[in-house]
Length: 226
Image 1 (cartoon, rainbow, N blue to C red):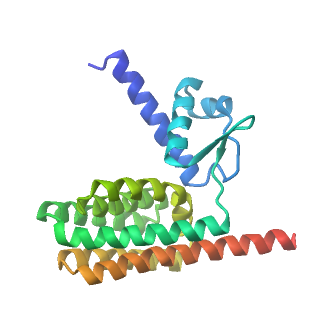
Image 2 (image 1 turned 45 degrees about the vertical axis):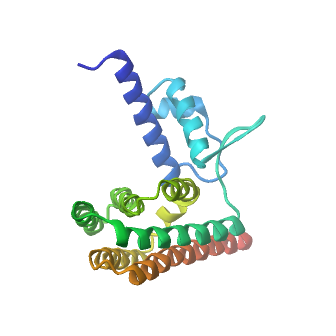
């Protein structure tokens, strides 16, 4: 039986996850103000869980709290994006190296199951489900590295560019390439091949960066021409 406290905690967590998804999947665009009243109506909750969710999202780096303006969906400059992807590429490459050395057989089985689910989402072209499973795979590899400091850094830095990583799969050809790279990651981990996993992880993230930069540059040109 759920207690009132458990019900409140579940409501707050569900609200946080829904609001996070709106930011990551672009329903709330970068630079937009988060209106508590409108969000409460949209998610059919009171403003209290909305406020808590916004605080948590600010701590995660997805929202910026600005004096006299309120909560704003983070909007990174082109330079910020390049720097952040450079950092996350190296963090992921190092995670892969350590995971190849430390991952357990059970963790590999669980990772393979996630890969299977992700492929099913890809086959359905269900980008939302695909991205959720994709993120779980990256987190699982990071956790398999067995380095708490690295895990904390990964979470903090990756949060800044989650919305951009989501968008990078909206191009069909690039999405297919990303899927192939994920299979290469799994194969390298199963072979415990440190050099291979580092190369694949690094290339995977840098390919994401290139797609994102191309998208942003194209949007900038479109706005300039308008």
